[in-house]
Image (cartoon, rainbow, N blue to C red):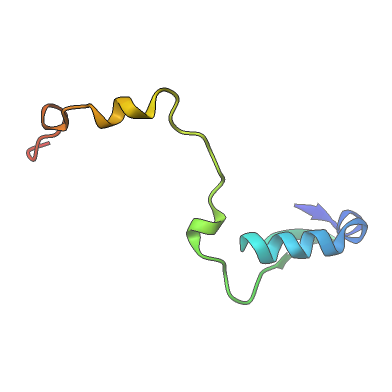
Length: 74
């Protein structure tokens, strides 16, 4: 949540961020909350944060016998 003063400091950067991510920004003005929301939201995949999920050798994944790891009954 931003104050109106913080919005004024970087209005174009904040508006570009809303357009790129599709994530609304809330601004507090005189005790009321205002939302800046893009007209058409960005796809959900575009809003995901980029993370490194796997640490290790990628070739090890290919060598796993998944039949031991997976069961239809689980």
